[in-house]
Length: 173
View (cartoon, rainbow, N blue to C red):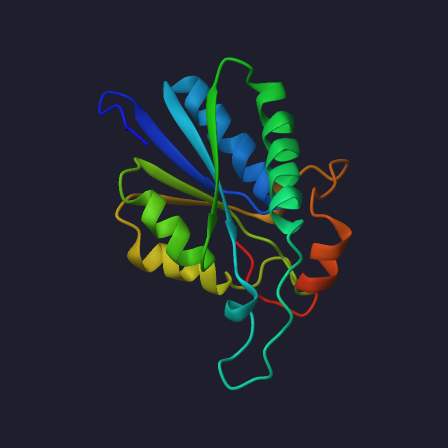
């Protein structure tokens, strides 16, 4: 993808959660105030990255997971740009570890925006491993949008099959 050096670029990690959609809305608002292009990235982790190397290999996701990922991204972006219709939002699905995918995309960005999902009873608990990795290694400023920014009447865009798979996982944006 060719990047125009004269246009600010905001990369947003999107996973379909209400918090990631809130992060995308925040990025679109920022882009509307300070002309920028928003780049929404969904990291699709392979099944081999979801378990420890010494554990029994998990079954691979069905081939429909790319279709589900596209739908998650489409719904998330349409909700965000509904509020900021003049903002340019590019989308991409990349396979790999979420932190690595986001850091790779942040390499030529002016800002990285992430939503912090609260999987614990304490919504103000520490950031997850993806956010911590991005805060440590991102070459640009990182904005973390907390759960309070997610509007209560807006639900997650995560398909039910993904929700079941994520219940035991703590690797959220």
